[in-house]
Every structure is written in structure tokens, then in C-alpha cells.
Length: 328
Image: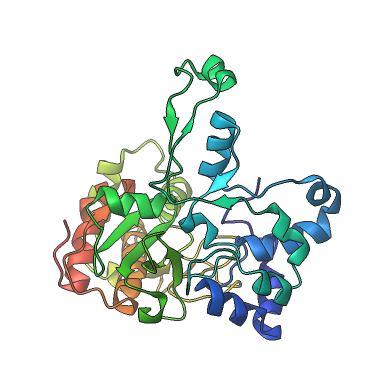
């Protein structure tokens, strides 16, 4: 299995930008092209692992694979389909024209049927019941991509509702009546299955892994997160001029900008920089990355947050101070 952090197709992203295919993906699916996107990744896998691709029967993302193992049904929903060949302008289904324009029409066979997230559930199979202990026949819903269903859990259902997530990746999103209302060509767009409504979002590749990494590098793995945050607070806001760029993914960055060569780095360091300064700079870098996304998507309401990273009072405070908005 390959995930969204996969860096193998980084060079292909550059090629697609240059030959116009990335623009076609953006026009039809509303999504900027990055190395972990299905159309790019399947081209890479077909070139480097042709036998594997030849044997493949269906492309399934994480939750769809789990549902397949539970029910035997190969299905997806509109949010997941948006990351392949779904035309989000009409939400009528996969675009055969896009697949052809990308030179990937032979892989359209891998795409599963699209069902609404609130459509008819599929019963748990007898085999899955034996393996899991869950009663056979238990309804298994189609579901949605994690960031979209998190928004629903936070009460975001209407156009204009927005929310943030800070976990392995970061996320800033807002619901819009249609893709024509999008605020940025650097964002990604997912159809929700609710008419032409879309979720426009920006998702920096790495969120909390920046904190995990600096904790390890500074030899602070034995310290609790509470102790780590206390240490970071010993540095003043601005981290004594130390600035951290949180672009730590091997595949580069996709938000708040797209650059397959982007990497994490520091600026403003000197012999006077302390452990506390370096640590605080990472907290600030992660938060400021979110601020850029908030500004790009023109979110002016209270910031409704979710995800393990927002257990950090310090990150919430930095976010509130930098935006002037209430974090809830």
C-alpha cells in the first residue's frame, strides 16, 4: 500500500506541471497534484512495478479497503472519488475524458462504484464476523474521508462552516456551495455527495510529526508533552528570532504552497539560540503554517479545532494570537 506521504512520484509531479496534466486535474477534480494522488501514483507504480499493477483489480483507499474486508463489497464515496477522476463540477461520476487526457484510461478499470456516504449500508459478512466477533449482518456504512467526517462530527454541515485538524497531517477546510466558489487554486476540493457542495481545504503534509521529530532530535523523548510545552514556554514569542519551516515530508509540501523540493529548515539561528528557542520555533512553525492556510481560504469565523495536536495549549494560543480569532 502507498500513502499520501509517498515521495516516489515527486519527479512526475514536476512533469505534470510542465506538460499541462496537472492543470487538467485541477480543472476537473479541483485538486492540486502531489506525489500521493492516485493518478500520479498509479503512473509511477505502472512504470516501476508493472506486474503489481497488472494484477490489481481495484483501487481502494484505507476505509474502503477495510469495508471491503468487512463486507466483500468494493465501493467508495464522493470524497474519496474526488482524489482520482471524479468531475467535481457536476459530481456525475468519474471523468473518462480526464483519464484519457492524462494517458491513464487503462487504469479507470480500477475505480470502484461511487455511493453516497448516507446511502444503504452493506451487511457484515459471515467471514468477517468470525474474524472480528462482530455479529454477521451488522450494517457497514460507506462513510467519508476522515477529514470530511470529522467536520460533520464538529457540526460543520452548512456552506461556510469551517474547521481545523492537527494530526499526522494538518488540515484547514471550509464548505462551499460549488467548486466555482473556491478561494485558491492551491487548495484541494472534495465533493461531499450533497449536490454540488464541496469541501475546499489545504492540508500541510506533516503536522504533529514535526513535534515528534524535534522531541527525538533534542533527546527529550523521556519528557512528557506537558514538560516539553513548559520548556518551549521558557522562550519568548518569536523564539528569539529562530524560525522553523515545517515542511518535513520526503515528498515535499502541498500546502500552503506546492513544492516537491520543499524541506524543513531553520533560519535565524546563532550561537545564542537555546534548546528552548529551537523547541518553541517548531511549535510556532506548525501553527504559522495553519495561519497561512486560514488566510488563503479567507476563514474569518471562530476556529473550530480537532485532532491530537490541538491538545497543546501552546499551539492553540499561538494560533489565536496570530489570527486574532477565537479557538474553540
